[in-house]
Length: 107
Length: 121
Image 1 (cartoon, one colour):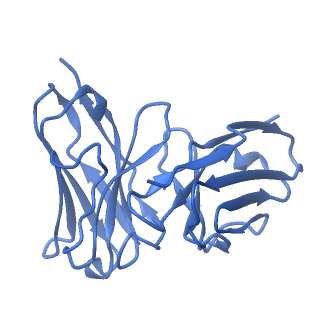
Image 2: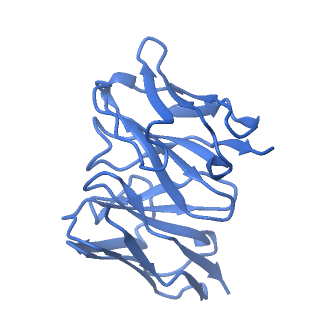
């Protein structure tokens, strides 16, 4: 198995802040990493694939980078609608695994 | 419009069986692999199983292997998850998600709204 460790598990930030979430894999996974946003009571929504490619329709304030074992998701200017929980997922090998999630709160 | 819609959840007793269905529309079903992902209330996401576009490859999470079976019906553009010997730990919302030709190396780009499975005596 390839556990993913996300940090922080919770963050509270103000509108306009730059926010960064980190995801660390226990072993190298190349660029087979995706990021999802989930709002309460809703299904996850894909944001990023291939570690850094933005899904169609996702605002450009979202960006991501990394390869191997270290990955980051950045929101350049936090907006009110960005609240929710963010998950990373490794797609390199089965069992596919998710990080524990980062809950983002808007101050 | 691309859609995936789960159904079949409900309240069952430990040891019971249940079959979940994921109905899809708006895209070429046979071009895609699919996955089931579950989420315990207030907790994170757990991948359960996947099935390739050919139906040949069907990996499972250790927690469900031997009890759950994933299958696809290409004639009806639907996906199923047959669950047996259910335990309290299987209580969760179950999501159906679409991948590329396989789920390995391809993100889950379309998700259903989920169906709740509650296992309780």
